[in-house]
Length: 90
Image (cartoon, rainbow, N blue to C red):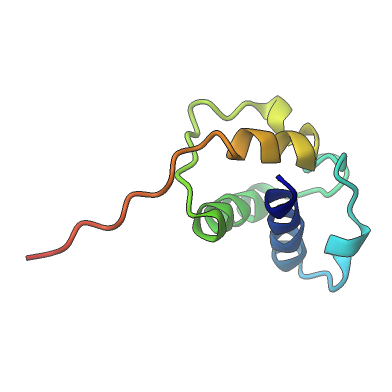
C-alpha cells in the first residue's frame, strides 16, 4: 500500500502544481478539505490514478468518505481491478 500512497501524493502534487507538496502531505490528509481539489482537479486526479496504477476505478463504489484520507483512498484503490488492455482495431 505504500506504493499506492506515494503515487497518490505525487499525483496530487502534479495536479495542484505545487512543488514539494507530496513530501508535506500526511497519509491522513483529507483530499477534499485539507488539499482542496476542485472538480476539474479531481477529475484529472482520478484519471491519473487509473493510468499510473493501471487500475479501473469503479466510480459507482467510490464513496465520498474514501476521500477523507490518502490512506483510506489507497485502501479502496487497491481493491480495484486492473485496466483492460484497449481492444485492437481491425
